Amino acid sequence: MSSARTLLPVVPDALDGLLELENPLFLTLRNPLDPDAGGVPVPGAPIEDVSAAYWRVLEALPAGTSDLEGEAEDDLPDVPLLIGPDGRPVVHLTTIEVADADIALLAAFADALDQAARPEPGPAYGTLAQALGELAREPDCLWPEGDAAAVAEWARQALSPVLHSPFEGPRGAADHELLSAVLRRVAGADRIALDQDEAGAAGRVVASVMYAATGDAHAVV
Image (cartoon, rainbow, N blue to C red):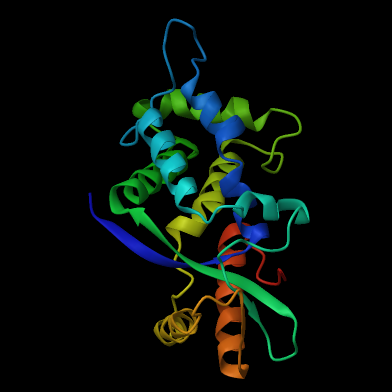
């Protein structure tokens, strides 16, 4: 199975949704709405396969990532923390290795949710559309109150840290090389001081991840 190494800024506010997809979204789609019907069919992305791919991606994240939620911890073991020229922390930066097939499954799942959330989803997506509609009416859920489209949009944003490259745009390739070089000089250090150019690249990557995960271009980490 081919895989890709992906440079990833570990931004807790952008990873919250990814870490929370299993419950209730995957659990609901895996469990039968009708005890005689089985799980919810997801065209092109069987939910059991998607769920397994999701867990493999989570296992690729650095140990302790989930402890960053809610500021339970402020450091990741064996993952360097980038420090800006002003002496303040910028972001933890790491590389993760993920299977191309797993990313393809998660992308197909997100596309199926989008299709099911359309006003006329088509017969193949009818059961999935019904499930999303029921989820949208659940109180106190992670997605904004709304309809099936709100659930689908939230799920795509939750998956964005693994589906969206933060190195897009005219400066993306240069930022990727600059931050890759930062990691190459780690030599076991748990904190790395950045110069102004490196801090600018790190800030752009964090902003890109946050925008993809929340849709808020002004979000600050």
